[in-house]
Image (cartoon, rainbow, N blue to C red; front, side, top):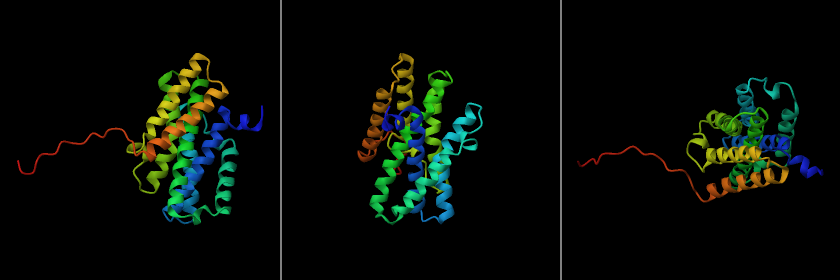
Length: 216
């Protein structure tokens, strides 16, 4: 197995998601003009928030408290972001990078969370819930900290993509088809759908309250 296969196996998706969400947290902190501590806090919580909630749900000590891997990955990601001066990029570039990083993190963490559900022999609901919580938990914490409405509540099939990815992984696992190539294809397809929904300005229907005609 070459280094690419190792990176893109199911365990590697946790690292991919951590890197991607660390980048998205860092970029959001920069866009919101937070100070250094603020950027660090937003970056950290974006990258580990969903995983902590997931681990609590399955009744285990959050892995970030036992294993330093994710913390090292987050630190290296932030150092790289500073070294390449991401914070000096044009606003449009920052926005594009944020969307791409957030999309990669969303799908990668959906797969990582769903994988844990499969390993715990959960039913479809449990697998999908773990994938969903792992993917959106950090983003919700991030957005709430900077006083934004979380993406999941109003934009781009955000939560729907996570649910679909986790559901497909569950079906693949039930059929014994959750091999490396199939999961890689699911990862690419999930990111593509998320980006297409964003740049195509697609969203689920909104339920608007009926408004009475003021002239009636």
